[in-house]
Length: 194
Figure: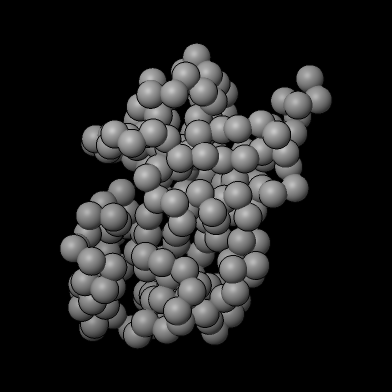
């Protein structure tokens, strides 16, 4: 099984990605302790590259990094790349978001989750970069207990459910991370054949 470092300190993210890729002969592992990149890029892609580069320097192994966030139409794309730093706790982030949208009607609460992924080879060369998106709107209140981050207030297009009300299996088919990861896995499958 091919091991790839996932440039994150979030073990939940590693579990989620390993669940999605379990049939592809790839196992994602955490970088060593001390992984703490400064994400000062201007785009999701910039930040993913910064994380991938740091993890690659620490391990000299192939590295996959993602940077993701929530972009809300009525807030001109915010919180965007600041999604993780939008407020203190997850609860505070959701409260701040709902507060900023309190006078915005449901039909104008369009939003999308974006996930940019960057894959580097063991020498730090860029192998692949792409992104995935999942569209929906920001609900009026938090619902559901699955997932993390903004999932409880993100109502997925074509459903009446928040991302946090979906099962792990349902989420792993439609999430922004799943869409981006599917592109990476397809790339790795082609690479394997060469």
